[in-house]
Length: 351
Image 1 (tube, rainbow, N blue to C red):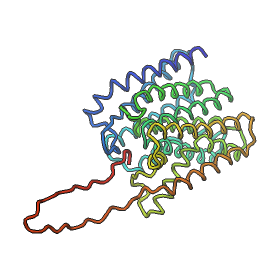
Image 2 (tube, rainbow, N blue to C red):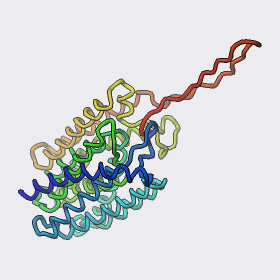
Image 3 (cartoon, one colour):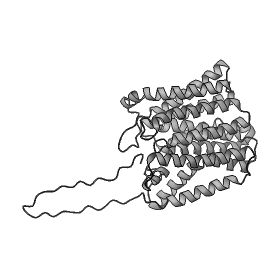
Image 4 (cartoon, rainbow, N blue to C red):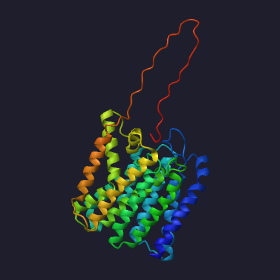
C-alpha cells in the first residue's frame, strides 16, 4: 500500500512536469491536436501519460516492490503498442479503420482465453476496443477525457482490488494519478491535449482491467457492470451515430455533435460541461462498482442504460448541424460607396 501511494504521487508529479516540458518540442515536430479550429494545442499530455505510467509500473515490477505479473506485463506492452499506433495517428492522418483493427488485435492478444473461452475472449477483445475508442471519442473537449478517465480508473481499480489483482490495481492507480497530472494542463482552456496516443492507451487499460476483474462472474451481470463503467462513453457514441445518421452525414467525419458540444450550445460553459459530464460518469462508475461488490442488484446497470438513453434523446434535439446560409448577390448603384461584409462560419473547437 505504501508503494502504491508513493507510485501514484510520483506519477502525478512526473506527468505534470513532463507534459509541460514536451509542449515546445511537440509544437516544433507538428504533434498538435488536428481537430482544433481556433488554436493548435500540442498532444504532449498523452505522450507524458504513456511514458510516466509505463515507467513507474515497470520500475515497481523490476524492483520487486509491486510485481505486475505475466498477464499484467503483457497487458502493459499491448497498451503501449496501441499508444504507438495512436501516436502515428496524431502525426499523420491515419484512417479510423486502422486504429480499430490495431486496437482489436492488441486486445485479442491479452485476453485470458483459459478462463473466458474462445468466444468469451473475442467478446472481451471487442469490449476493450470499444472502451478505448469511447475514451478517444470523449476527447472532443478540454478536460473531458482526462476527467472521465480518472473517475473510471478509480472505479475499475476498486473492482480489480476486490478480486485481489494487486499488480493490476497498482497499474490502474498509477494511470489515474498520471491522468490527474495531465489534467493540470488540460483543464479548459487546455495547454496540452491527450490525443489518440494517450486516450487509446488509457481506454485500453481501463477496458481490459474491467474484463480481468469480471473473470469468473456471471456473463450477463458482467455485461451490465462493464457497461455501467463506461456508460458516458457509450452515450456519446450513440448520440453521435444517431445524429449523423439523421443528418445524412458520414459517420466517420468529425463534427461538433458530441455531448460537450451540445451542452455548450445550451449555454453551459466549457468548465461547467466537464463538471456535469464528470458527475454523470461518476454515477455510472459507482453503480458498476457497487454491483461488482454485491452491494446493488444486477438490475442496477439498467438504470444507467435508461439514463443514458434519456440524455441521448434529450440532447439529440439540440441543433448542431446548421445548414449554411445561401450567398446573396449585392447590387450596387453606380457611384455608391463600396461596403464589404465578410461572413465567417461559427468556429467550434474539436469539431
